Length: 274
Image 1: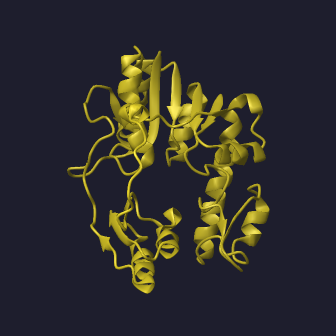
Image 2 (image 1 turned 30 degrees about the horizontal axis):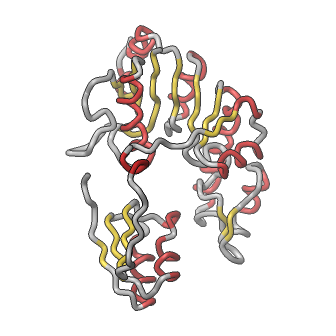
Image 3 (image 1 turned 180 degrees about the horizontal axis):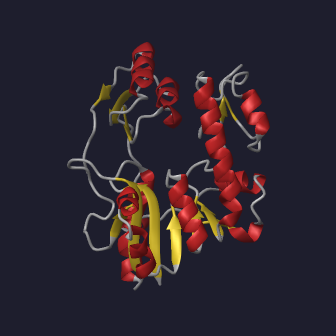
């Protein structure tokens, strides 16, 4: 089978790209042919999703700049497009109009304007609403996102367009029961919604017996340090631990503030390449 992967980034910037990086060789080992279509070029020395350079990879904007660019994808003749929330309406429309598409919803794609599914006033809580016009009305009273009205309207319109296209996908895959419930809430037919867990890429973890450890008083968080990860809440919950974090992201300052306030110290090491 010829599988075209559609995504936003060619470089590894988060979990989606890490997943694709492990998926590509697995599909090739099973005898499938794989290609990739992406929105944003990799920059500098960034690690690539297709790090082995073993599959065709097309840059969306570069294809559009050439008169017969889109013909290259047609000539490759994909049997199915496996889409991973590419942030381009034009790219998504082109694929849905011309090929059989499956969406893997790694986030609140078409179900939340801000992508956080969270209200922060009068207190922070998860949102369980179905996305719709009421979300726009509640954006300010519930502090769902920023205070710029033009940005709020733009994000709402973008999410509404994505929601309108969900029914055009042959299948929608999710990787948690929470996300499965989220798309059930948005009227995705049961036969079109599939729960598919993310793969465990290190097989030795399944075989290694559990070894209890003596707690040493150090806590390591390795990952993208954004507000959605909630690291500041983790630090407050275990103030007697020394918190160590690898990464450099916008959520670093709230975590540092929580660490200082809790008296736990903590080290923030910056970006670590794999």
